[in-house]
Structures are given as C-alpha cells and as structure tokens.
Amino acid sequence: MFRTVIAAALFAAGALAAGLSADEPKKTDKPAKADLKKLMIAAHRGEKSPHASLVSELKKEAPDWAAVGATAKSFGEMGAVLKAQPAYTSPAKYIAASEALAKAATAKDKQAATEAFAALRGSCISCHTYGGPSIIRFTEDGLVK
Image (cartoon, rainbow, N blue to C red; front, top):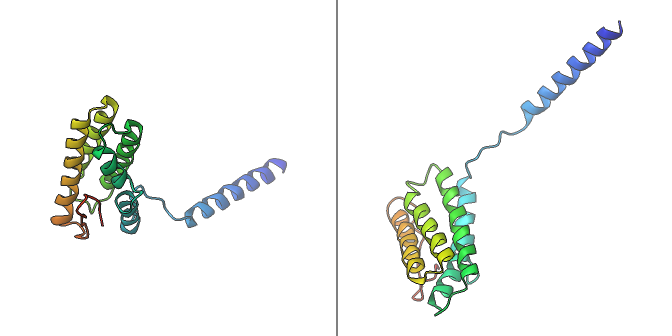
C-alpha cells in the first residue's frame, strides 16, 4: 500500500510539473523587431552611444584603445543579434567589419580601425537603403541622427 501511495504521489507531481511547464511561454533565441529597433537606437543614436564614442575616438590623434575595443565588442554583439533576426538580409558584412574593428583595436592600429568603421557604416547604409528600415541619417560630423 505504501508503494502505491508513493507511486501515485510521484505520478501526480510529474503530471503537475508537466502541466505547469506547458502553460509557460516558449522562449526563442530570435529578438522581436521592436527589441532590435531598441538595440539599434541604443547602439547608434545619441552622444553617448557606442557609434558616437567611436566617431569621437577615431578623430583623436591617439584613441583610447580600451574604449575602441569596448565599442567594437558592442558592435559584435549587435552583429549576433542581427544574425538571429530573420528580417535582416545579410549580417555578414556587418559582422566582418565589427570583427575587423575589434582586431584593429587589439593591435592599436588607427588606420585599420578607421577602415573597419567605414566598412561597418557601409554595411549599415547598404541595409537601410536596400530593404531595411530607411530611418538612418547622419549629421555632418558623422553621428547618426
């Protein structure tokens, strides 16, 4: 009898756990378009954004390479998000440019960092011009509006 009670209790606990987990919303690795938009704005707009920071650092004679590296990391993270977003046509150029920027920051190579940043911006312009949201605008000093 004791075994029957234990077995019934275990069966009930298992059924309850299965029922609770079935009601939980399923998690996906893909960000929603609204989340992607928020990330884009945070990474690219405003005077304290990673984009603005990089523009500022690359104008200096001797950039703060730790800041450039941190910025490159944030662009690399954005590339991973873009890769997971099915609406983004092809993040390959963005990802390659962010990796080149990280490598240039590690090597403290201003010319390579400047070229990688130009490639990064080119990939942004390419996407936003051909199929992506056409909301990208730059100020005269290279910042995103």
